[in-house]
Length: 461
Image 1 (tube, rainbow, N blue to C red):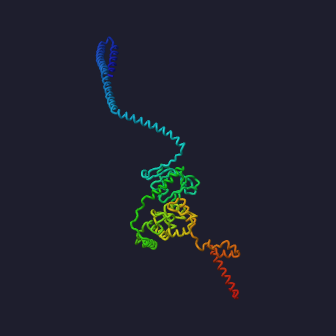
Image 2 (tube, rainbow, N blue to C red):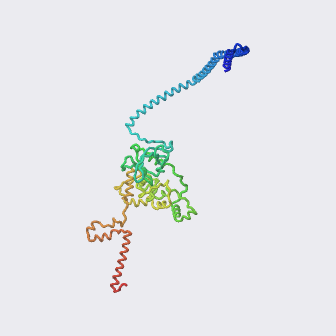
């Protein structure tokens, strides 16, 4: 900018010098002096400007090249260091390359193997049932999908993911759901029964003392797996160590006295509690005849029917449970809690007393007697004939069958038929009939009294 200003001043000085008149000598001299000074200043500034440009041009040649050379040196150092690092990592890269080749080969083999498995799907139906080790998978022994029949009035079927875990049968809506529903809390109280007479295929029942569950598998293979797993789970749960037994063992007389006292005075119990009786299986199996199963004579029974007052083995208890609680109500001797009233009933009855009634007239033509080693069909036929049909019970004297006259007697004396029927058949009474009977007797007595008064000439007021 300073150079351009001096250049403009020189132009003005030249323009002013050219305009001065020749007659004005002083003005001409002043204009000439200003022009000389301006031109001299312009020349000095021009020399400085050329000097600066020349210096810049000369510096450009070596300084730019020097900077470029420094940059190339930095690049060279960087790449040399990278080359040294890559040389150190060359064995690792070779090993990584071989590993990648191996993985690529395994992936190719796996793809070919999976492609060949499509033939297995067409040749065999694979059912998704997962077997596991109970000790290594949180107690899960089997899990998979089953159809479950609801207990409502519609009896609909829902598909659920069932799990046998830690002696329990639980299910959830899908396999990845967190919320579980416990179907049976203790498999020791359950039995498994194939539903052979049911209209749907691959069905089986899980029976407990309080309810019955109907389940359905997807195939025969899954059906066999679930029945086997449930039976194994029940056996495993039964073989687990039970609760700690008490050391003290009371005699039967002391136990009866304690139970009688508990029933008679509750206030005395609250003030002076009776000593706790021994466990139920010790008390009940100490009764004569209760050390064996009431039906098959198997030793060491662990179950009982509280409404029949008998002890049972596990096989017979399953059949008793399948007949329903209205026939036989099964309870465990070692797992359930026994009230003093039920223990007293069990002590008063027992296997010997019950068999004297239900096996009074054993006829093996009706059903073969069950033994500890017999099959389930023989055992079931014997128990149902014994308790449902009561085929071996001796008829009581004076029953309808004994009092009813024979056909020969009725044919021999037809006139006496109404008399015999009236004398032999028991009369059935109801509340209405009793009221009608009382009203009729009262009316007859009143009529007799009126007739007697008229005969003696006594008029009623």
